[in-house]
Length: 520
Image (spheres, rainbow, N blue to C red):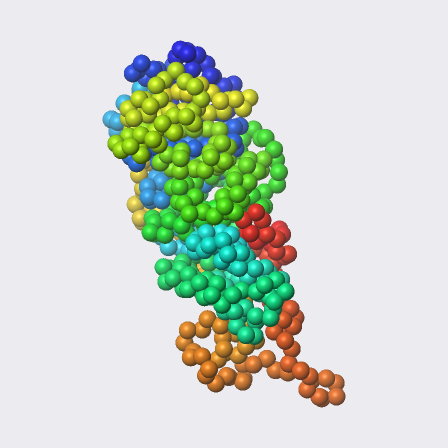
């Protein structure tokens, strides 16, 4: 295959993103642009390569072109250097040289952006989820529970859903687990096997450790509405949503699973649209290997189904990682667009991974093993889907320079952008309303409040806080209602309808991941 034949494979007629120019026989050919059709970006993709090879700048390049085409983008900013997408780039000799090499008319430009932070830890609008909506499958992944413990956690969530015990934050979940493991609550699940004291103990201990790591900040209200990620600016450009993650880098299981919650929530809410001219959203999943490490079979099956089906809802997902082997084969098979930066082969394991990577590409005119170890920073091997859905020829590519700032903006500018956002007032202040913890505490009395650390067990009960017994019309005292009666006939259902923020209380439904949403 010749250079002209490769270039012909990228000569699309419809809207497309410009990635760079073809590399052939050591020369960069600016008249042979390498592009990806806008309409196939919901067919998912992979951006891979060793550390320092330019993956982050590739994300930035794709994100800003999507924004310019009116497509919203979500970026997980693990290293804290993607905030520059909101500011114009700075001209310099390297940018000028790269632009000339690839035939790019470079001009500095910033793009509309919103900045988020998990639980408000970091510089961004706080992103929170309730424990109820996060669901048992994703939470089991974060807590690293085994299969039996995951099933028990699912049973606990089912009980809480059925009884109207809303799990808003982690103390709510601890309260329900403790109740179901107690003598009083054990009978509630006797028909389905119950939760063993040993399993309940493991779940409670892992929750305690989880909270000690600062995870309590991520669960609560107001819960983030993922519909915010689908917005466009007044000028028609797509908003780039940047989730700042440097503050939680030491909790990789948490942030990777939280990203999966965002994706699962979108999957649950978005309508089917089939194949569209442009995606509704393109979602970049950085450090993707963290999502798959130690994942249960049930989790991987649910993830694979979500990736397969969310395409028809107009959402494209790009996994960003170091090597294709980091992504399970069933998921990798669905990633039609590939940008593979350089790989290193310093060890036998590296060489094995290199050979495995080469086998994932279509036949090409290159010696890919040699090429992938010799690529420079900002160069990649590319193959995408054409407008008919067929793979394009493999093309060694020198990538374009982003038009926005290639680095973070300063903290003062970032904080100013966050506070100026129309979303700041909606999500900034955490709210702790009546939920499972308060309901169970009220039903059992403060001395037996589940999960209350400041009260010794066996202490005297405060009778003034016990639910009072009812009296009939003749003045005779009626028996005190059972816990189940109190919950079902209590204000929990009314408080569901008063959910703070964007979530309005309705019927709870659970999706592939066990995530719960109220019907909109």
